[in-house]
Length: 366
Ligand SMILES: Cc1ncc(COP(=O)(O)O)c(C=O)c1O
Image (cartoon, rainbow, N blue to C red; front, side):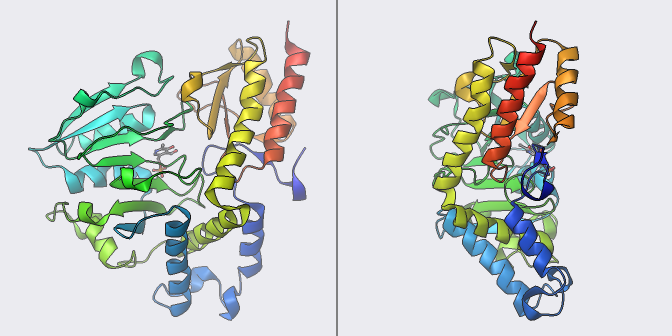
């Protein structure tokens, strides 16, 4: 069972499905991009042709996401994991403090790096309940002296997602948005820094997107290596050194695809419908499937669920694989099942999965 052109039903958590139209366009342009007689990969990053690709991607991202002029969009490398360290390196010293909200394994990885640079507080956590929900933050938990507050907007492994963001007043809010960036419109001005690896909603792995307020860049430490300073990349339009040119080209094409879908409003409506297909099956299964996340914290990007026992889960994953569904196993640290329904996963793939789940239940319930 596959979608158009024998494409797999790809529910991978990342790298993950890319729009077929984008892949086909890239294929067409692979050996001769825009009459240059070469691939985008072979262009000099200092050439006019590449610069157009680069600047168009930045402009498109700004326009689709309504990013105000007092923010920079940067294309970096090293993945979100490098940013876990780069952020505290820029904004913390041994005498300053930041707060982290703990909603899963990626928050844990982020806080571990921050502890190397300054004083770190956990202000809220749902760890005691296996990260099933997004904790609420009380106003009196916000410390005015914090250099920043950090949160993870979508928890790829546990399948939870913030619906509204806390008001952190004058304390800069930083968000790891790796697994739900550009899945819906958000108010960028709530954040001083947003970062995300591109490989879920925006393109192939290799590009890390940073959206950062200009006056926040000015607050950063200067006594750190050049490549780790946000200022370096902001001043040079992310062309200080060789950027991941092909990844940025692909990202630009994915953004064009989002525009063609009708922009973020259309994409987010589609994401809601896709996720509802699968959550509805879980909710109407009389406990045959159980969702990991509490209902009000459910992610529209990563749907995590379990079956009644590990053997049945193994059977489900094996049968799903035979039926052409890829990537439905839960993260190796938590087990169970997970369907990642990022922007580029087609509605038909989610529909087919929901039908498969209903069928599997019929055949296997005792
Ligand atoms: C929420 C979140 N943060 C960070 C990461 C790590 O990203 P990278 O592999 O780009 O370092 C991931 C990867 O899946 C993630 O889902």
